Image 1 (cartoon, rainbow, N blue to C red):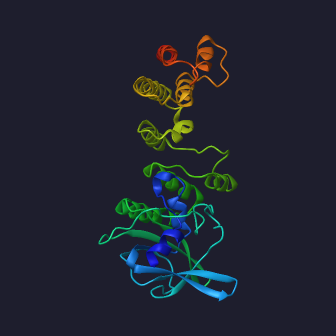
Image 2 (image 1 turned 135 degrees about the horizontal axis):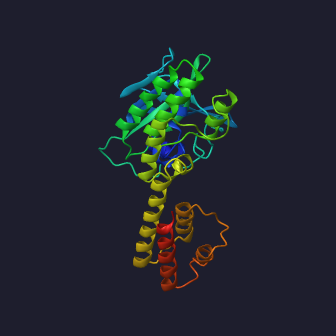
Length: 301
């Protein structure tokens, strides 16, 4: 019964690579974090009256206490599970807003997850259940523990710098709330992140490994590396286009625009060629245009 209910109640079904979970923020908002096996806990409903019920989690055991800044006893206690939108994470990903773990649980196999609890007055509340059978739990636990160094920072400037280091190490970027806060406390002067030379190099390395979300941060500092990255991307798209029917004109034209520093509105000869690059033209026509655009990008100074 527990496993059936668990599949419905699960709070988060994807982990770090989905980018929907800010592990740093989630960790900082938590006072107790537990690594548990499914048999270590149970979800239960408590009926308040004939028209309302509250959800609770009861932890019977745990594999590891990852963080504990709370002096509240949690073993064999009913801990409230909010069923409305969470303050920090969207309701579509939290507290039952998203249906389903979507996995068939195999017999004789152990499944694990990480439970995040927030202390509110003298009670604990479940913030999130991070759960996916193929997760690298050792790596995730290490990332959570690394947040402790940020929490011990003595000034906003130190906290900002360590946070950027953390995001870069995790191949991630902070959300807008992070930027807005550091603008508010005058660490940032605009809505653009400021990185040290060392941090910029790490951001470039993450970009060159395929994380294009770093483009805005590093494109002006490393223009040649960025240009070559997008030329190579165009060549890959061209080779795939020749082999199968799938073709994304958006991906190719974006790569061309970034390789050549040209915008969407480009009245040049090559810009007009780029506009013709759609799924409506024949394969042969697409290949000719793509080859011409790649050649033009390679000739750019």
